[in-house]
Amino acid sequence: MAYMTDRKRVTGLGAAHSGTHHFWTMTVTSVALLLLTPFFLAIVGPLLGAPHEEVVASLGRPIPALVVAAFLVVGMHHFRLGVTVLIEDYVRGLSRKIWIIAMTIVSYGLAAAGLVALAQIAL
Image 1 (tube, rainbow, N blue to C red):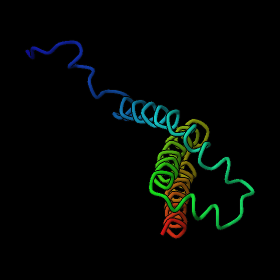
Image 2 (image 1 turned 180 degrees about the vertical axis):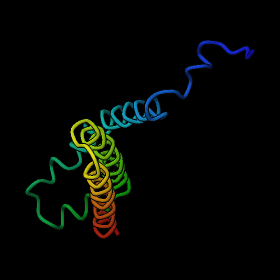
Image 3 (image 1 turned 90 degrees about the vertical axis):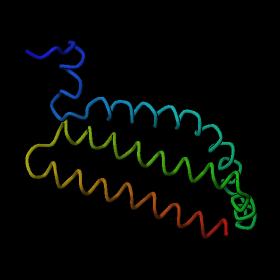
């Protein structure tokens, strides 16, 4: 006979054994985006339609570059998590795995490309 509490019996259970982790990751990235979005818009908004030199000068400063980089990384991670849920809900079979892998590659590829572009602008 095992002496386990009800909570101990259900911890870690569920269809994929990772639902709570996924929920908290989505929640944390949502809050991070909620905080980063106004700063991102305040930095990038005035640069829309600005001359190239002004954009390079603005994004060449450390704080705006860090805010844009954080927004890009957190946004693409949140996108990957969200699109994975969407695919899991609506796609079945082997194509589900293919789409999840493809969208993971796309999201991390976009994040990497954005960071490289930002680094080239900032440096």
